[in-house]
Length: 78
Image (cartoon, rainbow, N blue to C red; front, side, top):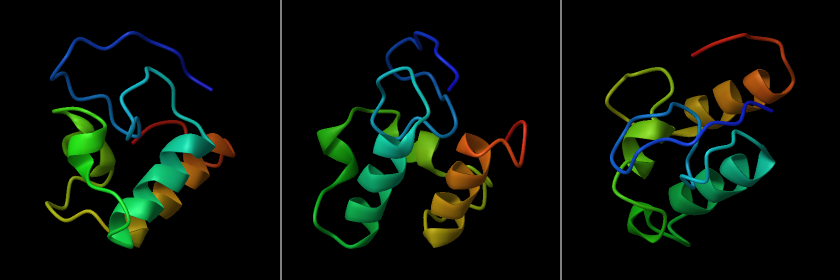
């Protein structure tokens, strides 16, 4: 896992819940958001931008898979 302390509003790709880490909690949070069980507002102002890991302008399951690949170290960056 990569740890950092992003400033409020700063984009930190993959950190969906804005806690400064990229981990399975981010994957689960994004899945809940996609399933409309939660909203980005729960996590902070940069949550949606952080979730768009492929910078497509849409947050979807492709972003979930990208975060999973990053956690599994199949990719090194977004």
